[in-house]
Length: 165
Image (cartoon, one colour):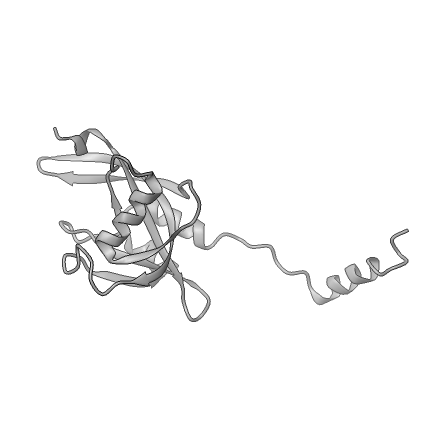
C-alpha cells in the first residue's frame, strides 16, 4: 500500500463567487476517473498547511485562484475513494475559497469538466451526502431579519435624547 492509501485525510476547497443576482455560485468539477461532480481536493503535501493544499488543488484541478476564508476548515465530510482493487474511506477537511480569478490555462485543463451552479444545484449534483449538506448549511444559513418599520420607529423613540436618563 502506498503512502496515499495509508493517509485517509484529504483537504478540499469549496470554490464560490457571488453571482450578478447577489446569490452564491459554487464551482463543481468532475473527477477524472468516475466523472462524478466533486470539489477540488487532494492529499496532504509536506511543508504546506492544509488550507494551502486546498488552494493549490483548486488551481491544479480547476484553474481558479482566490482567498481561503479563515485558517480552519468550514466542515468535514467522508467519501469512498475508488482505488485499484479496493475502496478507501477518506475524511475530507473543506476550506471555503472565494474565487477571484479563473485562469485560461492550468495543469489539469482538459481532464475535467467544470460548471458554476447555484447552491441548490450543487447540493443535488454531488454524490456525497455529507458534502451536499455542508454546501447547503454554509450558503443557506439563516440570517438575522431586519426589524419591521414599525419596530424601528419604536426603537428610535426609545433612543431619542432625553429618554436615556
